Length: 351
Ligand code: NAD
Ligand code: DAU
View 1 (cartoon, protein in one colour):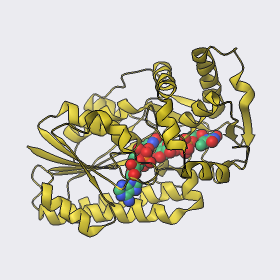
View 2 (spheres, rainbow, N blue to C red):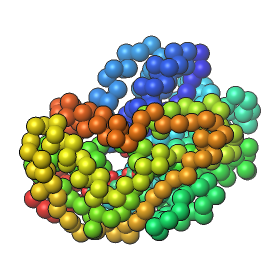
View 3 (cartoon, protein in one colour):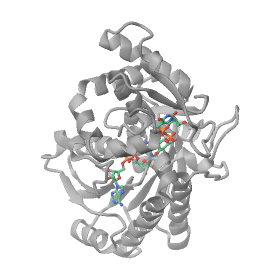
View 4 (cartoon, rainbow, N blue to C red):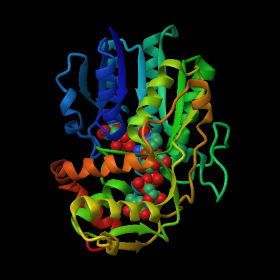
């Protein structure tokens, strides 16, 4: 049996990836290492928690001893590293946690992989999951390609950029077999509702203000989370060592367009009068250093590995709204407690 370590498997993308791997590869033991921060939730994995090829290990990727112990116990053939602090707004108010987890945590894993694999790297792979935000902000035109110069502009993206550089350094210096992917904004079920799409759906349902930063003109390139997972699977098995692959679905939308679309879908699905949700739109203070536009050129992944997304943006949005409307209890559970305090501090509006 092969052993694969997935870090951050209780989070949004990680839980989709764990579910996919456990079901698709019954001969691989999937070990999910997660610290269960506010963003990690084992409820996301209820449907696979008893699968014979799934194991959960609670732990912090910065904890050298714990990480070494797991490499010793499971003799991993591969690592897919997703654990991170992932929310830009939180990185603005508390950068240090991002440095700790995203940079120090990544190096801790790289060191553990090197030590465990003893420089015999046959059949081994360290896959680092990263973001398009490392490339900075685009103007009205152009796309991020794999050769775009790094220009991170938030503590979050700077910490992810550092981790990418370190992963590449371990490839060049020690020959550690690595691969990196940089993906655009994901959406789908199980996303923590601090992020725009679940936050807006949840607020519409509860008749709460929909906070739009600045003028709502910023553009993000949206990808359905299961299509990110299919890209990771493909890159893990077919990607060339030492290479980077950009992942994105060519779905660039201004925030205000996206929020209005969500308003109309949710109104329709809840049987509310058309236009009701839009009245909740509230323009609030802009995010500091708010990147204007992201857009991914994923032609390398498409042409070299044959990847293609499975759903259109419109289909993905319908599926996503359905998911949140059908998972009221999940939303209630994750938004209770500490989230309320975060929300009031972040938005300083009638929470
Ligand atoms: P998330 O915040 O939903 O989940 C992160 C997970 O990591 C949580 O389960 C959390 O408990 C765990 N974690 C955090 N710190 C940890 C630590 N020190 N040790 C162990 N576990 C820890 O994040 P996500 O949106 O699923 O993103 C996953 C990865 O994908 C991140 O590396 C992120 O940078 C990258 N990414 C995200 C997106 C996106 O749109 N969400 C896009 C591109 C890349
Ligand atoms: O591009 C990939 C990145 O996408 C990932 O690396 C990050 O982990 C992920 O969080 C996401 O970052 P963004 O900052 O783009 O996502 P967020 O959902 O926070 O914001 C999307 C856009 O919506 C952004 O332009 C800010 C804006 N926004 C966000 C929130 C939370 C609002 O206008 N109001 C809000 O309340």
